[in-house]
Length: 102
Picture 1 (spheres, rainbow, N blue to C red):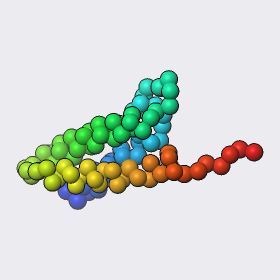
Picture 2: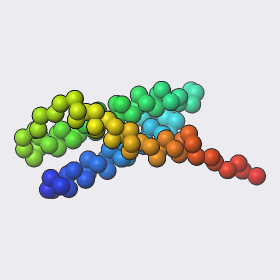
Picture 3: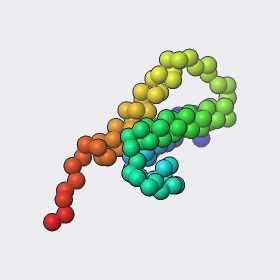
């Protein structure tokens, strides 16, 4: 795969991972919780998934060559991008009005 294709893989993975916390009441889609998941749990999952996607991207970058140095600006921008990618899941969970069954 070329570097461009790997970048698209990381972007699509980030889009999926950013929306996962909002799609289920299970913790990381694995463990059922006794009470519905709160927003705090979902944000904690979001942060953990951000670092997992970042680790995957770092491993891909290392596999194709030299790793570029990153400062705090890189993490600020990618964190904001990850939050932006999570917006559809947030809207679906908290803002979308579901119709009541008749």
